[in-house]
Length: 480
Ligand code: B12
Ligand code: SF4
Image (cartoon, rainbow, N blue to C red; front, side, top):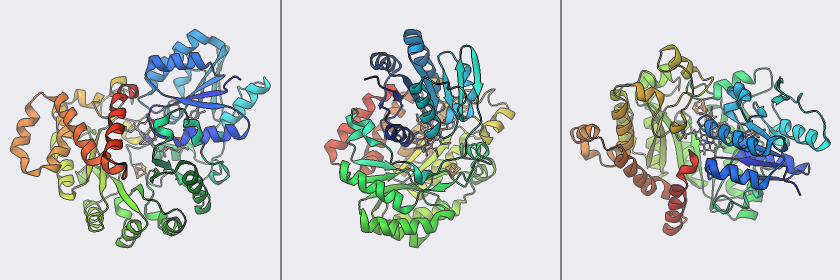
């Protein structure tokens, strides 16, 4: 039997978007599968499986690779296959439809657009007029309106069975779940405000599933996959408008599911009462955004609306209740100097996270900060070069910054400094001047596995954690 759609993703993790699309399609009798790999292996897999359509989950950065895959596949299979791109990148760069090898792009939520498309293909009907899609057909491009946002409680549970042939994901003891869509904040570097703008007049962007609906999914996962823990992957599970929901959820969760979990929070939303409840209900790891240690940059340029005081308070509470945590930080922001990156290292030294994630800032299309970077001449086009697609190596902005190399070195040894503060500034100043980027990158990875990965993969045993880390390192090249 012909496979209806083969999805392509770029991470060895459950992708809620793909599982959700697959669930809706399967509900209507379509067959789905998913794959990942290097450019060459993806082309080979698609050609071998020859599905009716191939659907790329496309974020900015990975688009270069996927467009290349699609062009190769079309060269070999021609009209026997349709290439469809969905996810944030085509949503904000719809001109992607004009690229060679791209047949269809989907903007915004894809469940019902993809369903309509597959139904039209099955029935041999016209498919150029489906909301959310832009379709290239016989040399013409048909662009369509966005449909209203969907009722997320009415969707079937995400289809985890789609990963049954990818053992690492399928049998992962940490299962990922999302409670809702959207975030009420408007940080300038993040796509949230752009999504909100896109969906204006199409319904309420920030939505939660009902507690009962989430419980049903968690119970199903518990029965089928026997996880040791959950990861709640919402951008910010806990923020100021969501406290009641969290209290209601956590109380039911501890009674009915009672498994350890990790989640993301906003540092300004936590109270002692909430942290105590999180601890009591099994929260074993938390992550929150610091972004920059420079308060002015954080609030004036990034519009994070987060004071140093909030960060210190959140960290103190987490230490008090012995919940290990990681922070998200960026280096290479517009207007940022090496000195500002130091501020980010220093605030992390003060709050002592288990791990401080330092990624290299990349301009995401349609975001306010990308507009600012363009206006100030840091770059000409908001984009991520193929070589920067991991968001950890470099960026166009940093390559043009005379302190860029030092900033990358500082980001790579940031966790060393945070863990070994007696290295202090003079020793670090020497390290920053040594051209040992490769070695620092390696050191960063080793520290990452010791201090972060082993904690995140909750009680999976040293051997499992080690093999899992080796597995992921061996597949790193596939992410580019
Ligand atoms: C969970 C998450 C992750 C997870 C899992 C990845 C994933 N993409 O699922 C992890 C930690 C791995 C991750 C990593 C990264 N992420 Co992330 N992540 C998210 C987050 C918080 C939720 C994604 C999600 O599950 N949403 C819920 C589902 C239902 O929606 P969805 O994924 O958008 O899928 C729907 C549509 O997009 C569409 N669709 C998607 N694919 C397809 C395919 C087809 C064929 C069709 C028709 C439709 C379609 O239909 C789906 C159902 O409605 C989003 C923010 C957000 N709120 O969306 C950021 C987000 C997607 N991530 C982002 C970024 C930048 C990254 C990283 C680059 C970060 C880094 N520093 O390394 C990496 C790269 C990820 C990659 N290559 O995919 C950006 C992407 C912006 C952009 N322009 O591309 C977002 C939007 C956050 C932000 N900062 O603005 N991420
Ligand atoms: S709080 Fe997080 S998810 Fe929300 S807009 Fe800011 S960075 Fe994006």
